Length: 386
Image (cartoon, rainbow, N blue to C red; front, side, top):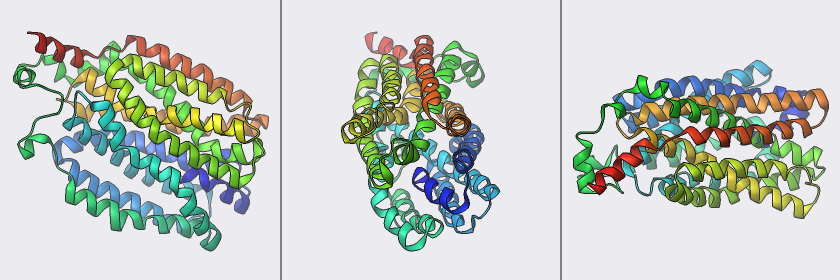
């Protein structure tokens, strides 16, 4: 939603691009703090209660857009939006990661298709609302989907873990399941985990890729509209196409991760750099499609990477805490990217330098994953072989 309302905000108040993206930065900063604590909350109170509370926070945050008239309102509402939405995403990732192992990447990609489906269809719902009611009321109306569809359906269907239904996690044989009782102590030690080379290297990669992915995504509509000269209609259709393509990206990279493990994530990160590079020539329909395809596929992969890496490297015992902490790192990158890119644009009048920076950062992010070892995945394979 956010990239599609920056233009109306700017036109109404005369705010700069770094000003309007404060709502995204506040969202991701608060989300980063919430992510640090939400893992422990999930482990103590479960995914159902966490999803219930965080959904309410998100719904009320959307309604609060009605009252925005100052920049500090953006920051305040963005803060609550981040606490709710990032915590909710972590909850979903933890839930799926409890149920799957062998096909975890594909399962995550399928489960998180909703974000891409929403992004691809939202412009056709939001634009008429913007024209009829203005951006404040339009955003508030969107909260109806939470109150009347998402939250009731989730609470009716979701179950905490396979064990609650007499099942076992997909992809783990009975032989390996029996061995989990004697799992090495390192898979239970959270403090040692966060001090490990794997965790530090993963944090570097995740932070940088979050910076690039959301930094570019939050500016996409404005870039296509004004800087590429395509106009608002073409810009929002392009954004819709990008999000539609990311549906394929989630499933594709989930499948790749299952087969190539960390190498698959490295490929995903490099593809993000390619997507950034393809922003430079955008100026017509053909170049727009090429950009949207590359960005959409790679963006889809970034939604799946954190829970996949955490499950395969650190195992299920402290999964909620590792996903929560790594999402905190990711959210810090999400927060920094849109604002820094906005500042670069405001000071230079162009996105060129920001795009060059993003390409370099994707290369560093991909390189950092060389030091990430899927220890839990390898341990499971060893148990199978015995």
